[in-house]
Structures are given as C-alpha cells and as structure tokens.
Image (cartoon, rainbow, N blue to C red; front, side, top):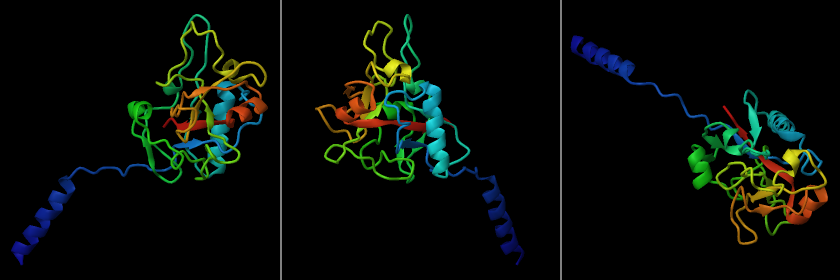
Length: 214
C-alpha cells in the first residue's frame, strides 16, 4: 500500500513538472471581405478600410481582435506604407480554422490561399474565375512581397491611397490563383480604373483581405 502511494505521488510530481503549452488559437484571423464599402477604390483610406474589416468581423461574431486591411499606399519621395507591415506576425486562420500562413515569410512565399481557403468572414466561398460574376480581383496596391511600390513608380497603384472612385488604378491579386496567366494572390495585375464599374469589368468588386494583427 505504501509502495503504491509512492508511485502515485511520483507520477503526480512528474506531471506537475511537465511544461504546460497553451492551445493554439484557430479562431478566424483572416478573411476576404464579403462586401465592399460601396465606392469602388475609395475605401476611406487605410483607416476606412480597417474599420470595414473590424465591422465585418464583429458582425460575424469575432470580437476582441484588431483588424487591418491588406493594403499598401504610395508616397512621393519615399516608399509608402507596406501591407505586410500592417498585419501583425501571424499565424492566421480562416473562418473554418484552416491555417493560411504561420508567419509573414510563409504568407508571401507559399501561403495556403486558394479559392477553397480564401473565405469571407462568414466562412463562405468568394466567387472566382468561371463564376458569375467573377469577383477574384482583391485590392492590395502591393508588390508580390507585400511591400509598397517604389517612390519612382509613377503609375497609381492604390486608387490615390484608397480615396479615389474615379481616376487611377489599383494593383489586385487573385484569391483563386487563376486568370490571365498570373496566379499571384496579391499582385496579379492592375485594375482598369477605380470606379465600381471599372473594378467589376476587371473581374472584381472592390473586395480586399483582412488580417488580425494580434
């Protein structure tokens, strides 16, 4: 009996000495917006785009997180704000708990972003190539590594830093990784313009990606 008690006590002490690891959070920390703010490339700047992400996430029932849009800006004389510098360090999961990327390197080198994983905040698929209407163009204003364009770049790649619904254009990515021979999720091509109509004709709807920064 005493021997048994010693064994139980020893096992208990051993269990207490083992490191305790927190369970990894697989709750939603990435999504494609289900709707746009409704003004084409005019998102109300970065602040307005971030607020749109925050609102959609909260309506979907995800609270307690800070959300930023995956968008870059352009500035004269210096590099603008880069999308990759705005979204935290990961990991990020979609609405169904599927891992999108563990960190920034994986996100920009080999992310798990395809049509079946790039879900909206409600866990629904977003229309891609072959669907009617096609909505696979996602606004980014970014180069493929997630950085803002160089100051010497004359073309408007950000719809005047997300304040124009008329002139300019925006760099877009393809969430379904299809179309035009370019499978980039964040830098496939530029839109035909910044109006809602121009974005639609290119294959988009003014949608963009949101990432939880914490």
